Length: 475
Image (cartoon, rainbow, N blue to C red; front, side, top):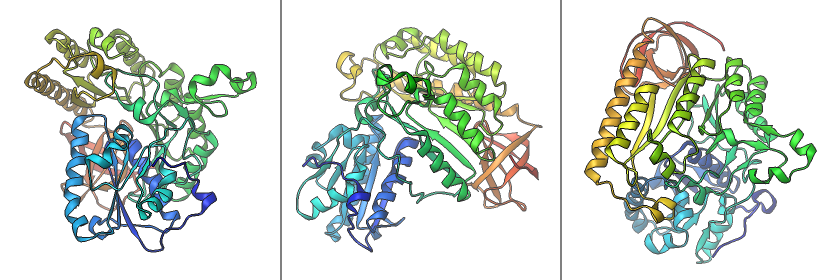
C-alpha cells in the first residue's frame, strides 16, 4: 500500500503512551538529521526513545545507499534482529531513507523481518503506516516531494551531546553525477524557508547549543524565492527574484543573527561555491574555516565520465582562491578510485592532484556500482577488485602523509577548541574540534563539555592534534 502523506499536527494521531522506539542511523549527516525529525514525529504520538534495541517495540534503521557496503551493513543488522522478533511478536522493524527509496516494496519481499518501508520524504506518514501494520496491511510510502518536507518540525535531539547540532537547509540534488544514486533516492533540489531555519537555530541556541552545521546534499545550491524547485527560479516573478536568498546571503544572515554560535556547513560542490561564500566566511569570525570540497578524481577523462561539472584545473584554481581569501582554511575531500575505465595514468592524475592540494583529511572509497545510476547502465565495471584495492591503499597512504604534515604545522601554535566530549582513549582528556574541523585532545583540568578553550599544540598524529589548554576564550 502506498499511503497518502499524513500531517501529524492536523490528524493528531496518538498510537501509545508508553511504546519505546530506537533509531539506528547509517551514512551521512543528513540521515542523522532526518532521524531527529523522525524521533520528533514518533514522540508526538506517544513513543519514547530508548537506547536499547531489545527494550523497544519499534526499531527503525535509517539507511544509506551510496555504496554497496553500506547496504550490506544494513542487511547484517536486519539479520541480527531476527532473534528478537522470534521472542517478541510485537517487535516491529522499519527501514527508512535511501535504501528504502531504492528498493521500495521489494524490501518487504527480500527481508521478511521488515514491517514498514519509508522513503526520505515520507516520514510524516509513519503514524499512519504504523496503523496499517496493525490492520495487517503492507506499510510502504516512498513518494518523493517537490517541496521541503519537514521545515515546520522541530527535530528531537535524542542522541546528542547538547553542544553540536545539524540543521537541514536543503534537500535533494540536481547534479546527476553518473556514479551517484542520491538524485533518485532524495529527489530534486529544493530549499527550506530561511525563517524556519533561523527559528530552529534560535531554539538550539536558547537550549545551550554552541555549534550548528548547515546541511544539504549541496549547500551552495541553496536558493529561496518563496518555495518550489530550484529549476523553477526562472519562472519566478521579478519581486521573487529580487528578494531571493542564495547560500552566501543565508550564511551571512545566520552568522549575524547568532554571533556567539559557531557555524559550519556541508557539503559544497566545486561548480557552485563562489566568491561571495568565501568572502562571507572571511568576514565572520564565527563561521568555521573549513570547506568539504568533493573532487572524486584528479583525471579530467574520469571527471567527464562521472558527469562532474569541473575539470582538475578549475578545481585547483578554486582551491587556490580559497587559500587566498581564507589563508587558514581547512579543506577536505571525497575521492573514488576504480571508476569504470580508470587507467593507471588516471590514478596517477589523482595522486598528482592530491599532492598539489595537500588536503587536511578526506573520505576515500572504491567505486561501487549502484543500480539505477547512469554509470551502472552505461559503463562496465572493468577495474579488477585487487587493482581498486591497491589504488585505494595508495590514495589513503598519501592522504595520511599529507594529514600528518599539515597537522604538524600547528605545533607550537594556539588553537581555539570547542569541547565536545571525553577522549575515547583517555578518561583524563577532553576532545573537540578547532575551526578547521581537526580534532584536538588535551587534559581535562578544570574545563567542561561546552567550554571554549585555547589549546597550545604540542604534538600530533595524522588525525589528531594533542596539546594543553592555556585559557578559556569566548567566541
